[in-house]
Amino acid sequence: MLNLKHGHLSVTGNFRENNEDACVVDDAGRYFIVADGMGGQAAGEKASELATEIVPKKLKSLIDFAADTGEKVSQSIDAAVTEANAEILALSELDPSYHNMGTTIAFIVASAGRFFVGGIGDSRVYQLRGGAMQQLTTDHSLTQALVDAGTISEEDAATHRYRNVLYRYLGSKEGGTGAESKEVEPQSGDRYLICSDGVTDGIGDQEIRRLLSSVDDPQQAAEEVVQAALDGGSKDNVTCVVVHVS
Image (cartoon, rainbow, N blue to C red; front, side):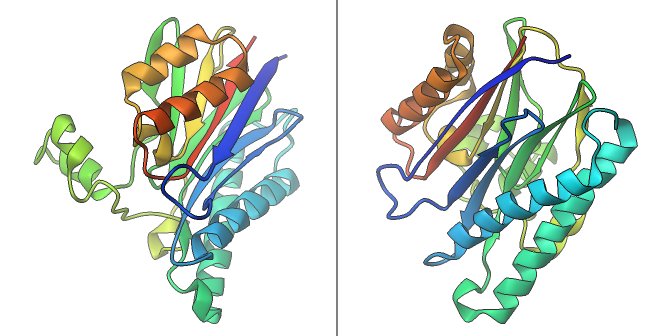
């Protein structure tokens, strides 16, 4: 039986007028989700709100969290994400004030002692295990595509003019093509971070690793990650969820 402790924080930040990020943590430890909305006025806020409402509702209707594993969970996640994508697309076409709205989504779904980790867009999930940290999700940004193609380096990507341009997100045709969930076997001592790009706009992987390693309370860790991103000059909304496994 997994024992999960979690903390979370979402702030508007120093440069934005409203918070277009959203996050949801399930008190029963079944799912943890971060969404980063985009679009004019309140459109991004609406998109991230829809994602964090629709996806959990659908997951709860499709998954037996005590028993389901493997393909069943991955397919259920894809169905939930596809439904959210369709709803966001439909509303953006129906209501002019929500035209072209969209949102990223990154998540951990816990079922039958396994984690299913994935996302669409450039919100991320990191795993810290035994002092080593790795990013478990892939950014669906133009810069990441250029890095993958060998056109630019990781260093170039950090400041590239297209680093915030996404080719897949919820609210796009490509958003309904699956969430690329990875199945992970969590181990005692693991620490996970789910975050919007407001975190990585302010701090790099080394600082994230240091904070995850050194802070033993997940709520305090979430607060310190957000503060470090703000202190580091993040110009975006900043949201993160921290999950500890014991």
